[in-house]
Length: 249
Image (tube, rainbow, N blue to C red; front, side, top):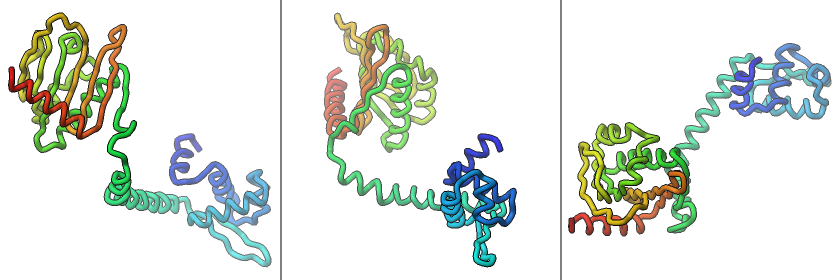
């Protein structure tokens, strides 16, 4: 039996000992605990406990023969029933998580904790932010977000996600950009206003998509560092500041 097939059995909740004893029973046919233990190389106490576990799962059955119990493996097709039962139980659990458990846990969650702030590094972190913007804004009826972006960082922003703008436009997501310094490509569903760069050479990108704010900057060797803050209060304050500045330009 290949590793892939064994992994499939593991996904059904069977451990290596259970798989070994089940396969032993398939080879032996109806057999006593002693015979199964001898054939599998597992001591009789562990063999008996494992056979009981397999019987509970419905893939082993037993019948009395004199003063002993004789065990037999159910047809391997029964494994499909075991998988279907697990799948149904998982579906019910997922439904309970969405409707009951997660809402109840959120009520006990503090307004702000370390869980509200996430740190990422490298191009993978930048791509995560860009995808999070698409996913979050796509679910928002307003389908829009705001950005403050410097020229220095714009040169690196879409390196890990070159078709970001194309996907944003295809989803009808609008963006307003306050660009620090010249440059920046024009695109559909995008408005842009410019701020003078002055002597500023810092690389930074701030995306405001309530209830989140994402900030990207470049460390040494142009290595991106990313922070995402999930806070309605902070996002709202940043949005007010952005809107105020936007109106003044």
